[in-house]
Length: 183
Image 1 (tube, one colour):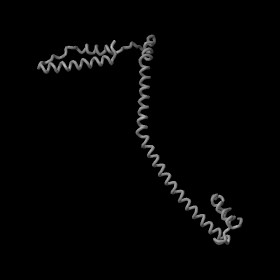
Image 2 (cartoon, rainbow, N blue to C red):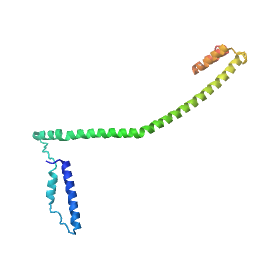
Image 3 (tube, rainbow, N blue to C red):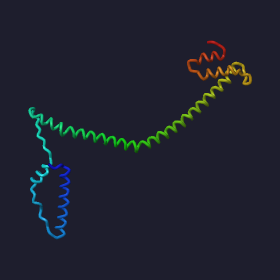
Image 4 (cartoon, rainbow, N blue to C red):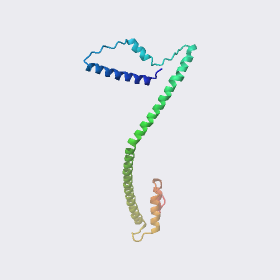
């Protein structure tokens, strides 16, 4: 029995040989006769290269169908699955190679922009906190009767520490402590 690949190579060789013959006959100004091969012979010749498996769906012949699946179909399914996995891996690798550097560059640029933005926000927040701290110091010194020259450094450190750790729940207690009065 001839393998399908060998049959295709043989058919290709015959096809090329025939076309050379037709060109030679045409060059000799001869008219070739049409092929005298009946269609049934061509079909039978093509079917000679096809493997036929007897199978049956009847229960007492089901062993033939089981053998067909085990020996013919399942190996082809496994081969197709392996080829599909190789193809997917190749596509993922190609995608990784083409998109990876661009994505890395974009993420790097995004990180730089985010870093610049966060530095700007921190500077603005720092300026805002410092402006409130300065106003708080002036107001605190005024309520305690101090001028800027007579300020108590320990008291200022305590006030600044309270300001750093301040939250909304402590607001009434902080005001009462800073004026020296309890509510």
